[in-house]
Length: 455
Image 1: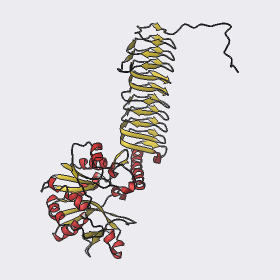
Image 2: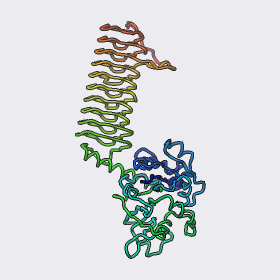
Image 3: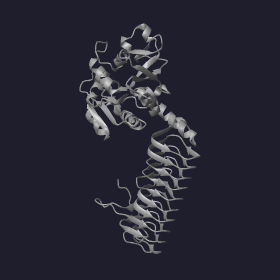
Image 4: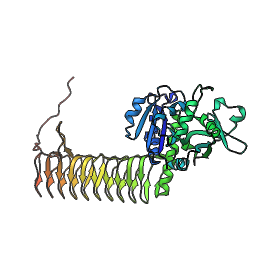
């Protein structure tokens, strides 16, 4: 089969977005719309992805660091036909070409596979959609036999044609050699003064090609974004699809409308997810996990039976089986919690490896540290891991008890079963079973009078 090349049109300014950011960089589900389209092209097995850029080209290139993308600049925006023509020199004659749009981010790969799978030199694949309100779209014109013969843009349509509800999505697939023949012949003699890609449908019919029409499973798959209202509509549709998937895979959602998935989320069975939870990046959740309201979880693995309590933020971490997090805990990248651990309210960890059964219950910072099994860290404890230039590690052995309000000045090691007295500042290593107390001696002064205000 001939190679598949994908051309993505992403040169428009998007003035109705009212933004300095190029339209295709506005996000749906946490990533730019253009990135969704590129990911779809990659899933289709495209040999090469050609992205036509214009407005904000430098921004688009800077944010889209995809080695597989061939950037094509359209210096003047003269219509969709003109945009595709800019990519012609990079398309091999034997290629199958699929044309997508950077502001139509949620077309399913399965929808497009049907268009390109059986494409040959005598077929043009066209994706259409039937809408209750077709206003703004080009209409699909069929002959008496029901065969597609052309597409007419709304501004050029007659009253009879405007009544047609089957419309053009702009997405089509055809061989490169036909594009190279048709695009130079396009005319801009129309109401917009532009070179319409849609005019190649009539050219294909005149050349004896059959028009193979398919439609998406849902109209939202082919909805483009011209303003922030449409952007929000796509976001809500996407999130509803994610919520429905999670519920069919074993999750109970307190409110399906108040969970956002902005990346890749895989789950086990019997998951409970409360309201206003956000998942970002790649998140893996085991069985029988509960997640409280207001949590943000990013690039994290959570094992069976873990309990994530309200308003906890977890990023780049590994949470062990039956661990308990929060409420109001923050696990930063590099945190690794073993089974049956606890990180309580207003605790922050970073690059901390915490052994099985260990507890950091509240009001503590543990960074660049290794904790053994069954360690108890008292309230107000911090690891002083940064001297202003370099960071150092704290090592705490099995069974250590760290009293409240302790400062552990790294690098320092507290060995097995040692005890740190409350309020200590530990600057030297502590051996097995030792008690370390490092604080000023208390003095009680009798007869002392408090200062009084003077007039």
